[in-house]
Figure (cartoon, rainbow, N blue to C red):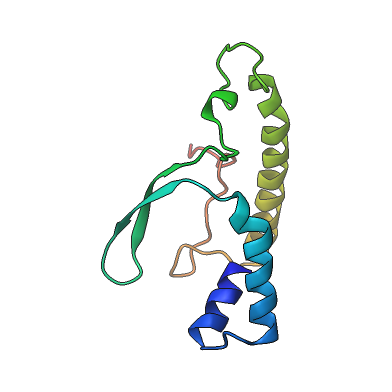
Length: 125
């Protein structure tokens, strides 16, 4: 919504019904809770880096995100196993799809040479 509002305001459509709705929503629900400071490094053009954010209302708390042995840790390294399992399924699916493309002759190294089968190459005698 922020990008859409920015685009409408950039186009000079300050009183467009959609711009008014987006602006009022942001002011009513978002702006009231925003406090603090943001430090940016500005460079030429649209290039910038976000250097620091400070606010009493931030939801990010690095001390709660530790996987080290801390008192009342909200998660442990065991919790990572589920995410890794899901990621492995994605890798397996991608590998299977690459196999389909390879068998169809769609993957080559250039000059018509097929890609090697990673992990399944036979060693030359």
